[in-house]
Amino acid sequence: MSKYMQIDIKIIPFYKENFSKTFPRLYEWLRKIGYANYVCEDKSLYEIVDILEDIIKDPKVAKESREKLSSFYRKAMTIKKEAREMLLSRNLNELDKLLYKLEDVFSDLDKDIRYW
Image (cartoon, rainbow, N blue to C red):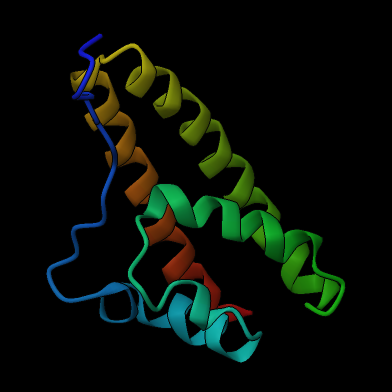
């Protein structure tokens, strides 16, 4: 390793507009339960998985909502764990595929959340 430099490979958000416009129903729900400020800085979906975990553990959030969210969270966390392994091993092609899968989970969540 270099004495004065480091290699940094990280996942950063890249929305055409922003999170609230990309996932409007999910953002509105997060706003209603008091979590919109956690995504207002346009965190990556990879980072937002951890916020979903906080919501599931939050007793102030309706139990029914937490139960409905849990299946999406489990899928997202499984993908995140695999993605982390690909990131650490610098397997960027597989990481890219997993990030697409994670986007699909969030798209499904955004569609489904309107029925909550």
